Image (cartoon, rainbow, N blue to C red):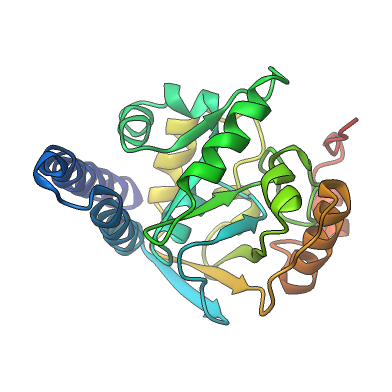
Length: 269
């Protein structure tokens, strides 16, 4: 039954994704005759996110009001599912790691839909992406970044990298925050295993196993206040602290480490 459920969800997900992608491409062509492409794309990506959440079986528990464009939103990062969840709540684009471009189908689609990519192995790429962030924040859309730089099991917020906060720090642009968490039903496997993507499981294998879940809940807690600072490193610490206040751990640190004794937390230099 779970396997059949996953097959049906996967087929529905692919059909809906191709449908919305086709509409976005039509809007791109229509921009030649004056259509506001960014605005239309924002609404279509948000609709795609909502439909994907419905297909996958994600219930959203949201706290506080989501920001309206223009905004820069900082989020913790647990899984690729974060993208669908946040798309469903906001008109936005993401800054994603460059390796996302290699994902089957999804990589091609989000690459051609305007998602911003950063190669974290090239320090010079940070300057390029900061310029793109400044150019893409407007009344049609906001930008979301994941300063942790990677996903985690969800028992803590990882240290924040401050490199992509140069734009808001230099302009003293107010930054919004959101804390994302997940929980599964009692009869299902725990969320840190099935939803958070922190181990070496290949993307498609993890995604297909996730689709076997009947449903699960995404807890989306938007920060009530925007944070401003003129030093990116200090700003990073303030944002991390604010998200920690809103964050609901997916699993306790003790429980996770007791069950995964060989796990080594990521340490950033």
